[in-house]
Image 1 (tube, rainbow, N blue to C red):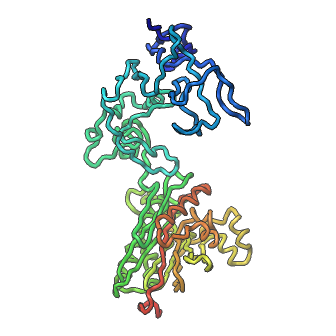
Image 2 (tube, rainbow, N blue to C red; image 1 turned 180 degrees about the vertical axis):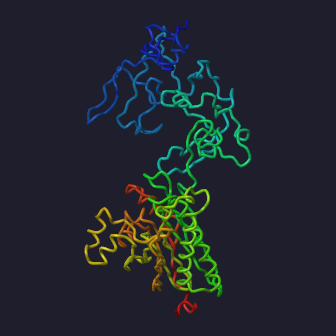
Image 3 (tube, rainbow, N blue to C red; image 1 turned 180 degrees about the horizontal axis):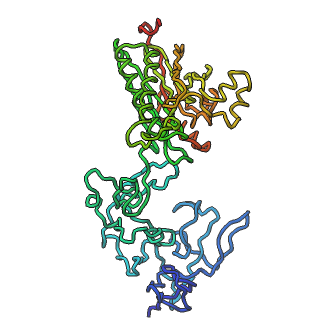
Amino acid sequence: MSQKPKSAQLPTCPSCEEPLESGDLFCGACGYDLSVVPPRPDDRPTLVMKGVGPAEPEARVPDSTVPDAAAGTPAAGAPAAGAPAAGVEWPTVTGTDSSGTPAPLHLPEELVGLESSGSRLPAHPGDFELPAPAAPAAVVWDSSARDYANQESTGQGTAGPEGTNEESARPESPNPDAADPRTVDPGAVLPPGGKLCVACRAGRVDTDGYCENCGHAQPRERDHVEQELGAVAAVSDRGLRHHRNEDAFAVSSAALPDGSPAVVAVVCDGVSSATRPDEASAAAASSANESLLAALERGTHPQQSMHDAIVVAAEAVNALATTPGGGMEHDPHRHQNAPACTIVGAVVAGGLLVVGWIGDSRAYWIPDDRGGPPARLTEDDSWAAQMVAAGLMNEAEAYADARAHAITGWLGADAYELEPHTASFKPDRPGVVVVCTDGLWNYAEGADEMARALPADAARRPLHAAQVLVGHALDGGGHDNVTVAVLPFALPPQGAGSAYNSA
């Protein structure tokens, strides 16, 4: 005669954690079958600690016997099946029936499970179909942490540690009538050209940048931007403290009249105290890049092309002061707070390296052979630089002053005067040019520091190098927007020449 299943004598139900009474065979709350839970072993643990051997149980299971579920899954470091026990012995099976036969052993996969509703799962895996794999995660970069990163494209929650669904733990939507993202077809929600919310994956994003379903603000397009053209790459990031990215860049390449390539990188930093600094930097980078490409293709010398491009960029930023819709066209004092930005650019063409700048964005030269000296190629238009140039302070004292980053030159309608700085170099070895805003060089100010932060394979992997430098700034605190372009410089082949080499 078979014996009824013994109660596991547990304090709470292993399924719903409802308190149990002695002798219960089923949970009164969820109906969980307590007979599938093995009884507690009466023997002591069989662990070895600091040379103390395991407690000796009353009896042992033969080596060929599979341990029962009461022993649990072997701990990490336990020998594999068939391997010597190495001092670890399995506990006995303590349950017996009326004939004294040891209780049957169960493998974990033989135990019958329950669905979340409390009903039993099929006993055999073949009795039901596995759900289809979830759609791949839609990763959205938000550099501040970015509230919307790694949101699942299905919008479904995942099971928490207690078997609960995280969806139920999320705060309620501010809109009580909001659609459930798990049941909404995105194609039915969005009109042509509309954007889907990256938070709930169900709502349409309004023109003000907020989701009409859940109310979440959407990450801006310029929060993090990357671009690679093979011979040049750039990365721009909002940083960890600013609410928007006021930097901008442009990278491009052109063919000179003799067929040789010219590569361009332009980086601009919007002046935060000015009106619409993000628009100023975007206008300057775009217009300077277009001007450089056109001039280089015509055969204009790169240094003259750089000078003219900075003038064109200044005109583009000046035009923003009176642009309709900017809110300044009727302001009699609009030039006192006109859109403004800094600019720095680099061109590699015909064996020459040309840089140009206004403001405190910088260019650095880092040779591939780190045994050679790196160098800073630009001089800041800033209060600190003026103090050093006048001999009133050394560089360490000047840049430690609160006025250090007050710029004395910029692009904008309220600039004192336009004085583009340009310089040409003819490196005798291969290397890279790092073109960046102060959001980076604040954390690697000296040329030696910048060289240490730059990966050794920067010439072969410029995008990776730019990503590493942006990460260096973010790890340092990310107090400002961070933008960096990495422009490799290779020596021209022996015997190759250019009209610029004799200039």
